[in-house]
Each structure stands twice: as C-alpha cells, then as structure tokens.
Length: 302
Image 1 (cartoon, rainbow, N blue to C red):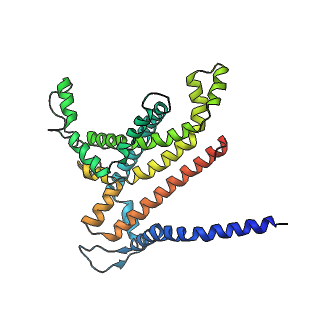
Image 2 (cartoon, helix red, strand yellow):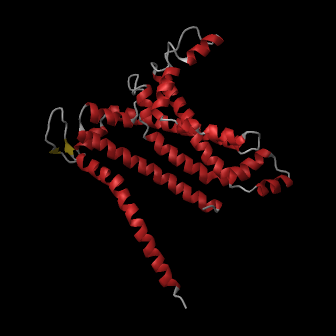
Image 3 (cartoon, rainbow, N blue to C red):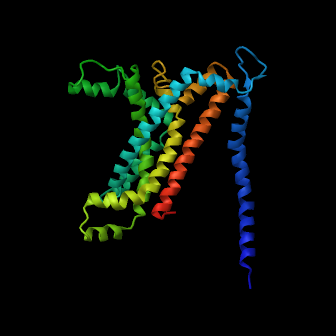
C-alpha cells in the first residue's frame, strides 16, 4: 500500500528541482538589476562632474522628493496609463463581443485584428508621428477636406493635443491585445447559461450584465494588469512620436530616467528613479493581483 504523504512529498521535491533553474534565471535576469540599481542609488555618481562614486546614503531619494520634473513626469505617466488602459478596455471588450459572434469571414477578421499589436512599436510611433504631422499628416488633410478646420493643427506641438495623439496611437496599437484576451474569456462561457437565462425572459443587456460581465471579470483584471504594467513603463512610442515634448507635456517617467542617465550621466539619481518606479509598479501589481484573487474566489473561477 502506497503512502500518500510520501508520494506527495516526492512530487513536491521533483517540482522544486525542476523549478529551481527557472527561478535562478529569473533572479539573475530581474533580481540582479534591481539590487544593483538600489546599490547605485546610494551613491552620488555623475560622470559629467565626478568620475568616482561617493556614498551619499538616501540623499538621492531626498532629492527626488523636491524634484518638480519627476513629479510632473509621474503625473503625465498616470494620465497616460489610466486613459489608455480604460479606453483599451472599453474598445477591446466591444471588439471581443463582436468577434465572438458568428459571421462570414470571422477567422480572417480575428487574424487581421491582431496585426496592429504585432507590429514594432517604434515603427508604429513613426507612422503616427507622420499621420499627426501638421503639414503633411493625413489627419489634417481629412479635416481640411471636410471643412472642419481652415488651417492645419499642430497636433504634436500643443501640450494637450500631443498627449491626445500619443494616447490615441497607444490605444490603436494595444486594443487588439485586450480584445484577444477577452475573446478567450468569452469563448469559455457556456452558451447554455444564456439559453437558460433567455428562457426566463432576460434581455441581451441583462445577459451581458448578469452573466457575461461577472464571468469575464478575471480576464478583464488580467488584461488590465498586463496593460497597466506596459503602459506605466512606456518609452519607445512616446520617444519616437514626441520625445517627451512639447515642454515636457508627454515626458513619462521612463523618458525622464533615460534623460537623467544617458544625457546627464547622473547614474546615482537615475538609479534612485528606477528603484522608486519599480516599487510603485510592484505596489500597483500587488493591488491588482489581490483584486484578481478576490474576484476568482467570488466567481468560483480558477
């Protein structure tokens, strides 16, 4: 007779043995850079003024508290992240609901819908920079032909319009990612639930509100978790489209860190910015994971 505890213990040890190489790789790839960044943040090291690092403790973090440019870039990052993620969620859900229906050519439409997300972000940023160009952009050309405007709009030269442009470009590119995730969630919902609910006299809106939305909440939170992490660390799209301008109106935290380290060669302060940004992102992900676990427990999903 087999001992269940012994077999379970062997399986757990085998699982740990197989997992340890992957954990070590993750620790080396992700853990070491963060530890190194924290260590560098304790030093004053600016290659433009001083070659040798000088230990300064938490002076870089104190400096950050009074850095107006950092707080401005942090606020810009929050605006960009919240706006893009919410818009992508709404549009992605609408597209997923459409793609979940049966119609001719559905497979081709599903395949085509993912193309914007698969394209390189830098290439997309360059394309949208030309689309919003004040002299040669297609957006101004269409508005002029329709008689909506009389002269070209400097989309990327105005602070508010530049933020709108980069959010629009990001939403266009990454909405397919959310729609595919939500589509997978929709396909896991049994049609029998809708049939039984319709027999009881439920309307399509009631089906969506009482069946689709509750059962789709785990996938919605997962999609938001992925997109929040990506949008919070956005770099290439804004770097190509506006470079953080005009006047820092679209300068997110990642661009400020890049400028601090690569342009001003301030490695100590740049490392402190990396550490704080990383901790804020971890905090946001932890909160989202907690909400996801509560949602799974409430809906009974795995």
